[in-house]
Length: 324
Image 1 (tube, rainbow, N blue to C red):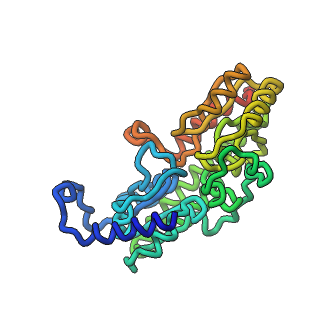
Image 2: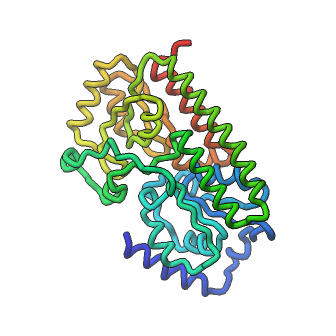
Image 3: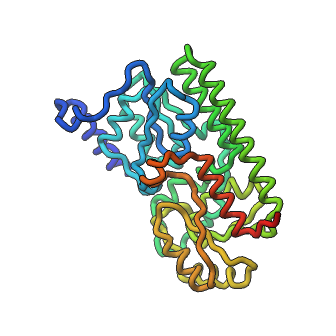
C-alpha cells in the first residue's frame, strides 16, 4: 500500500507541474471567498455541509457508488487535497492511505481534521483472531483496522462529537465566521439528539434485540448504544474477506432456529453471502445502510445522513418485530 501511495504522490507532483489541459479548463473553478473542503466518507461530507452553510464548497472524495474500504486515491485526488483549505477524514484506521498522502502534502495552510480524534475507539467485536485464521481470505485490510472499530458515525451520540470536532476546524480556519459555524453545529446536533431519542423510543417497542447481518458488520457502536446484539458470518470489516462455508452453514441454522424472517445486507456491495443465507433459511433481505458512501442516484436526490438513518430505523422495525 505504501509503495502505491508514494507512486501516486510522485504522479500528483508531476500533474501539478503540467500545463492545464482542456479538460482541466472545463472544470468548475472554486468560488472566490469560499473555503474549499474535501471530505472522505459521506457522513463527514454531509456534516460539513450542514456546518459550513454558504461559507464553503464541500466535496466528497469518494466517487458515488464506490465502496469505501476498497477505495484507492488517484493522483487527481491528491491534487484536490493539496489545493484545499480543509481536509476532513474519519481517522487513520478507516482511511489508512491518508497518512502517507498527508506526509507528502506541502500546503502548510491546509487544516486537517481527524474526526475520530476525541473518540475512544471500541474493540472490533467481530474481529476474532483465532477465527481469522479459519478465513478463506484474511486480507491486509483486516489488519489495517488494528482490531478497533472505526465506524463511529453510525452512533448518533458519537456523530454529535464528530460534528463538534468539524465545527472547531471551521472556526480555526475561518475565525471571522466562527459563531456562524458553531450555531449551525448546535442546530444540527439538536437534530442528531432527536434522532437518538427516536431510535430509543422505537427500539423499546421491538420484541427482538438481535440484528442478523449478512455483511461486514459496521453497526457495532449502534448496537452497543441501543442494547442490541448482532450476528454476522464475517470476522472483520474488509469487504475482500470471505466467510468460510462452515460459518455460512452456522448462520443458516441459527436463522432457522431464531424467531426472525429477515437478514440484513450492506450497501454498495453485491449481497451474495446474505442471499445464500436468506435462501437457505427461507428469510427475506433488508438493507441496513452503513452510510460509508452513497450511490449516484442517492447523490442526485440529495440524500442526507439523517434520511439514511431514519430509513434504517424503519427497516429495523420490520426485522426486529416492532409493536406499537
